[in-house]
Image 1 (tube, rainbow, N blue to C red):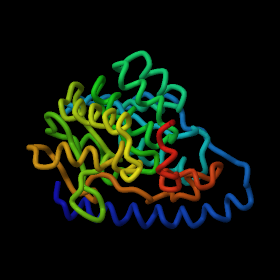
Image 2 (image 1 turned 30 degrees about the horizontal axis):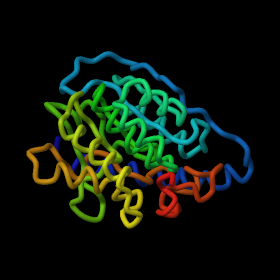
Image 3 (image 1 turned 45 degrees about the vertical axis):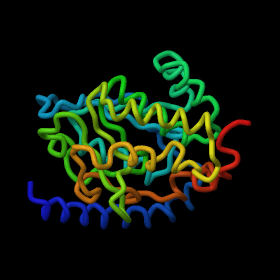
Image 4 (image 1 turned 180 degrees about the vertical axis):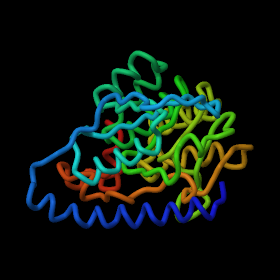
Length: 260
């Protein structure tokens, strides 16, 4: 598919998303307590042969499945763009349970040392995808093209580059199970937690910087974010953390990221 057509789709989606985002302010002023529920499991609505090696399941997590209108619209839009994929939402509690049962002991112990949900999600996502494969997207991420078309022909993994530079980011990940790069990321995150340096903060301890350092320069399928998945189209920090002000990882004191 032509990059030009996908970029046009990106711009149209952003325009619609921004309009709905603006309308959500008066909506939540009138209905301040109204919340919507993201389901724990949503099966594929249609069946289509898999045209890539990546398992057809989407993984997401957040501090709560109860969300504002923009967050819910973002979820619905992504489901529209991935009708032939299963969807699974994993709660904070379920993340910990999964790692306790399915991750190496050192991974679970490192996870348990973290005090921030975003940092915990960083370690959980690479472990989950290493074990089972599939697609991970941050809860505020928005697909710009149907997912089965984006993944067509992907034989191992698909990564995207961040907005401001060529750094490979982790808010969208698609991979087969057993990806050796993900095992290296897991091990690096565990090392960073057990040898914690506050100067790294979340970004450098568990976040995109860890992934970027391992996969950059490797022979991987990496695309510009504008051609795959973007953030902040339907929502923003206010609506994502409407019930948890200043809950974003950027507000945490780096000194408090790892339990003493």
